[in-house]
Image (cartoon, rainbow, N blue to C red; front, top):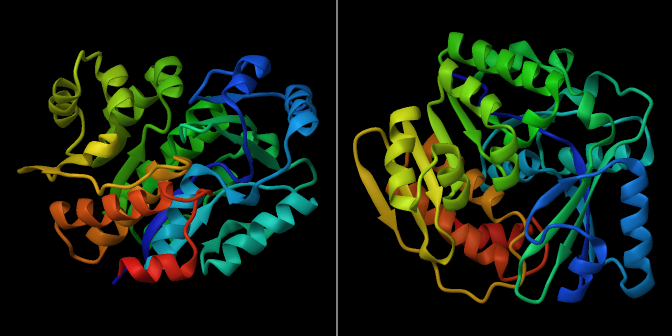
Length: 327
């Protein structure tokens, strides 16, 4: 029996969240609803602009795959997370956050000097979130951060799509994919963000050529990757690229394909306040469910319920009481 339900690999970031007015998006020069990678100077500029009008609403450990792995652990699954932070205060915060979530991690093996990654998440009144991300040392995530023994002892591998922006991180994810496949694990990946898919399509194609068992995405990401004009068309095309598909459709729920049968699972009505992390917790709840023997329809029901609860409040993660209510 494998030791871990899911082994995740992704960027390690500390999320700093602000509630902002719509007008601030134009003032900042950022693309609304998108994740933009920035250097240290641009990160400083945005923080200075925010400080003129707003205060921090919430701060917590983050990173897309980290959010997914925390959800898996909160629900009762066993997880291992590979990432990279430095030995600064932000890195200390992130490592303590993983430990509090009962996740095993490669960070126990030591951390380098440098600046840990941070993500500034700006939420407008319509619940859309615009992110400005400075990866810091996370950008140099490489094969040396992999734990091969843990990879061989996992049932599912989960690859964060944002990793495609870094050549060394892509190499690490591809190696993780190979090790997992040789050990008989199921390989899953998330497309992460429409802009990422558009600009790094070749990297996702490379993963697909080597074999993706399960892809997580939303409608827009799916349409971009498959060059489709509708969500239905994209959903069908994804089935020719990946063995299994989990495509979120916003308030309409999700469309999933288990390799044989399709399920259209309706969403849970809710008033959205903040969509940050909705796709992350959907993937986490879904992976937890199927790793515990649920079918794809049951998994999508739990994942939709989790995502709808998350977007009804601020922040990219649920607290333990909210998670317990999902079980």
